Image (cartoon, rainbow, N blue to C red; front, side, top):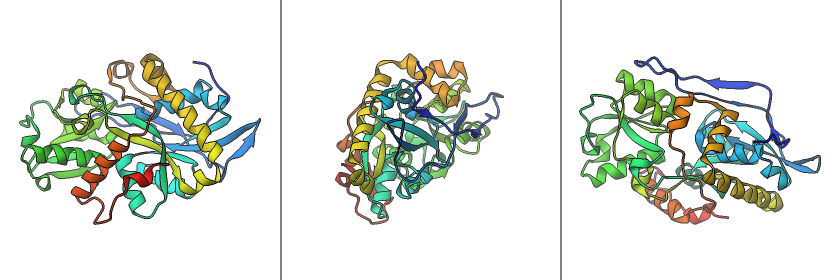
Length: 333
């Protein structure tokens, strides 16, 4: 990979270190700089400066890859990737103008829109991998667990990354299909990095993890169950890059350039997994033994309206929207 000058990073690094109890190994240190981006796009060396708020997770590898390979520069963009402190901070970061674009799961964006935020998904983020057995996500149980399938989850504590999340909807949907009342499952919100230790230490009975934590928990002896994003839909769009309706109206050329660059970056990532794994070194520290084994998400260039409709249906079914009507078409440009 070549170093492109459009890859702008701030100087202060923030590292999140998660230690796995019981097995004595460390989960990856996920790190990314933070900075105070400009309130609006500006010109520098003929390039338009933009800021993109993300979490330093595997899912956003195509963005880093595209910047590093000069794809965004070729489309006239100088990109500053800014680490958000948490997933819930991304929507207010974009609506306040701190970020021009952000990355978030589709369920959160649907709920944010229902809460009065005028947003649109301009490019897809990542997708499920064909079937539950080969997905980059999975519900896992610790070694020796008596839980053999989703039918055993009644009365159990299950870790999810956030309440009212796509993870919770996925588990609830699969549990209900198996005859288990989702209300009997105790969902315990925690960060993905906390889940391996919580699982190994017995704080939860099961955890819904994504890579690289899926591989980390498996290497520690955990057993995946047949519950994953792909259980909902083998072609499920999990997340997307979004902006505000106002920004899209005020800066249509910038949005068009961003979409074109993301499309190329997603296609490059999907076609070259080795280069993607190299790109992870730009913003994460993942044990090479984990990085080489873990399953990457699927990256496709088109936003899936079907996925938005499915997630809206599940969010309303399980009461995430608190009675508010969700409008999947409203998130489309």
